[in-house]
Image (cartoon, rainbow, N blue to C red; front, side, top):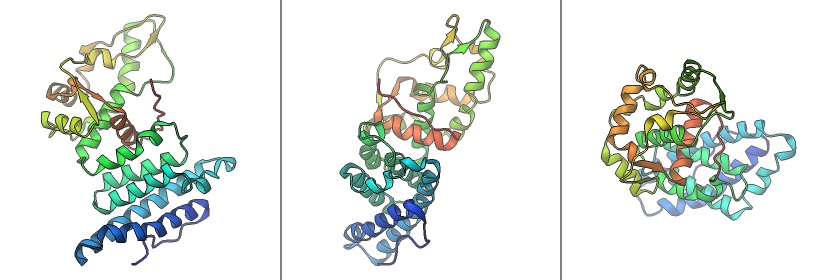
Length: 277
């Protein structure tokens, strides 16, 4: 079988990705051996594209790590949980050419490489790999939107002594919602049912209040964002439609939070740490 990693990758990241690619030849052969030559060729091409993305991401990760922490690559494939996640991600990548799914699988591996065995990405990463191929791009984006709404907050409490200052800060914080809601005009109630069926969200007869969700902790007293100001934003029409379509009854699970946060961080350009409550 032709190499899965056509371009040379250097450093410790290269050693890890090369070893993974070598293992992947065997995994992939077992996956596609009973299928037609056309299916086998498409699977190989999918995995090659995935491996190129993974190599680039792991190289960036290596550059971000302090020299004292780079032995994570040496330990990665020796840890059963990490090795299993990599195998799941590679085999999931083989059956899709979708860029969003490949990016999600790549990010799951990249985050797992530096995670403690009790971190969320280690505990639910395998389950996330299992459902990625059942998610359309709009579902992944919807989970990213829900992660921003329900799991991600400023690192410091807002200091605001008047409503106008508070509203301006809050609306600035929620500005990324314009990007996260854009293009979700084809999300309907069935999409929330689908996410619930995959274990990415749970649905309740109760509902959360959007004004309360959008309001951010403040001092010296807790304020609530002015909805008239919210309704003037560019993202309000899309947000309102999604809430009424079923999002107000939905809460992300640990799987949905992980997938959503990884998507959110890639789109918005930040790194978020999810804490267990």
